[in-house]
Amino acid sequence: MCPWCYIGKRRFEKAVAVLREKGVTEPIEVTYRAYQLDPTAPAGASTPVRDAYAKKFGGRERADQILGHVTKVAAADGIEFRMDIALRANTVLAHRALHRALETGGPALQDSLKERLLRAYFTEGLDVGDAATVARCAGEVGMDADDLVVWLDGDGGKAEVVADLRGAMDREISAVPTFVIDDRFMVPGAQDVDVFVNVLERVLAK
Image (cartoon, rainbow, N blue to C red; front, side):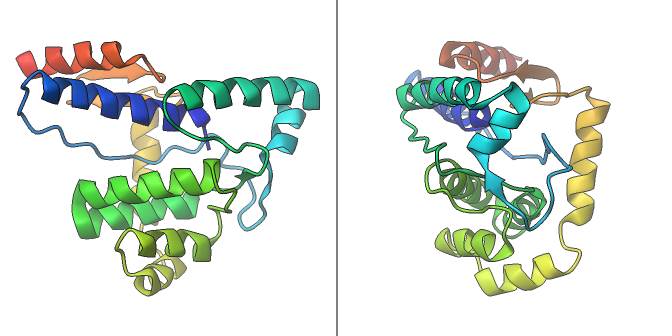
């Protein structure tokens, strides 16, 4: 849901690309952990993001200013935001699906699903709180969509999401994006590419 998570993801990826250009060959494995900015968002009931921002920030004019700003920042990082059609939804199904991707296909598949869900939400105006939508996105990146629907209909991934949320609390993480690197360095926010490069170089040097 947080636009800075998408922006931060892209900047981190660019930082890894910079390291590769510098000749760094050590493996850098990325996994995504669940965090809900608004766990009270009702399941199965999406609402326009513009309306949610207007309610939170004091009116449509202020909401449009904020959304316009992040849209421009995203564009500079090569991401298209369509916040005028984005739908605020409860994200727990998406987080559970990301755990399923990690479980069945490892970090690479999880990353593919993460990217697909971000595009679905920020660019395509799809309801990522809807199980059918999440499953369709999963199918597009090579997962078994029918299997995922059955898995989500049960308890699959629920314990893992709870564990992620507890892990965030234990690390005193209160905002996203937050990058935890080698479980020793914590980088909050969608930092500039060179910040990520510097942190990764420090970790790899040790």
